[in-house]
Amino acid sequence: MRYEQGHRISKGPGSEKISKNRGWQLVLLFLLSAFWFSFFLFLILHNERDQAMSGIDPVMRFSNTFWKTHEAMKKSRITVSRGGSSSSKTISALQRLTLAGAKYPGTVITLIGESRPVIKKTIFADWKRLVMKDNFHSSRYNMQDMVYTFPNGSLFQFSPGDDGSRFHGPRQDYVLIDEAYNIKKNVFDQVDIRTSKNIIITFNPTAAFWAKDLLTRPDVTEIHSTYHDNIRFLDQTIIDALEMRAKIDQNFYNVYTLGEWGSLQGIIFNQGKHWSITEEWPKEFKRRFFVLDWGFSKHPTAIVELGWVDGQVWAKEHVYETRLVNVKGVQKSVELRLEEIGVVKGRDVIVADSAEAKSIAELANKGWAIVAAEKGPGSIQAGIGLIKSHPVKVFAESINTVKEFRNYSYGRDRFGESTNEPADSFNHSIDAIRYGYAYLFHQKKHFVI
Image 1 (cartoon, helix red, strand yellow):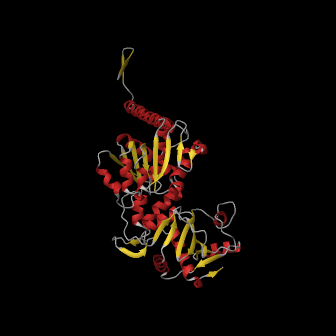
Image 2: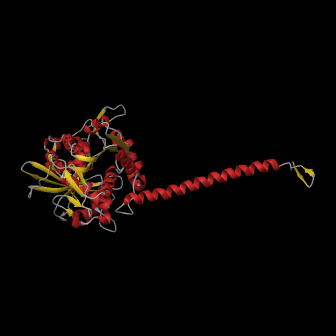
Image 3: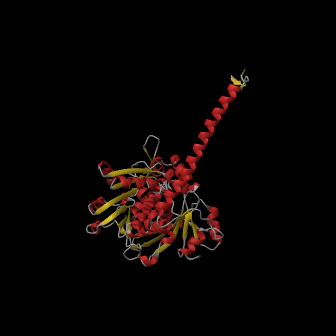
């Protein structure tokens, strides 16, 4: 109650309830204001952080994997970056090292890939296209030595890891070892004692190898990433393909979707016995033709050139690409790619998966000499047997085909036991090559459309 002009006046029956409601409304208004203030402050600071770190490129944007890499480098000398496919492990490392080179004059940065052809198609191509963009100037890149010189004198030097002896002398400030599973331990040992600041090691954890042994060292920090750490930069088709793998190949899902350590069991083709990598390519073949495995959104179309000379089969990957339609039009197409790689219409034979009869007919109607591979019960095992009995030399620039040969394995059931049937993974170029082997050694079983 209250007093007014000397009289006691009572409150109305709902006045206390109204007062309490007003109090809760004020509290709620305060909390909402605090939330929105914090949210906009986060956006401003996050943008400023991106801008501050970008340095040479104000539109450079960073994934969560970048910040994991950045924090690990501040904490430890060696960063072991384990992750699934499309998690931006390599791009994040390249961004971080590019910023270091741009900020500190005279910095020497070494980037190690499996071989010169692999570097050209992977880390160099990604760095030029996705990191440097318009800041890349060809006049600053020495193609022979694979060294890029920044305006401040910093060096980005790309070094093949297939010869450990080349790392015995040079010293550097930073090192990236990309796809380290394919790099020998002695390469790491040499750069470890010749690198003054940071070493970053990136890989898909296909199976345990020397990088896992480093995790007990006090100067090592391991970071783990998946496509979720890079999800705002990914197409939905990539996300769908990664998630779909759980239903097809559990080991693939564990390694490439979840970024967890896997195990390579039941590998079908042994490197050195059934296949090998070569940087040579014969000038002439006794037999030469092309093989094609169809794909579209979630699976790539693979086109491989096969040659036969002096009892040896040679393979060179030309196309490994998604979203190719069949004939030329407004979209990128198989027909356009065939023209680009030099297939002569009406003369050069193309052996294609017979499961796509309509696609074969479309190209045949355009004048291509396309041949349908006959498939049936046992054709997969028969093709595997032919490859094992006639080992293939794979051209070094065929990076996807090499990856397939290294990972093509027998599937496993829910108990982890081998099914004795190849898993439906890492088989696009290999399937195409199987068609080619069948055509080469049993040509009478095929027909020309």
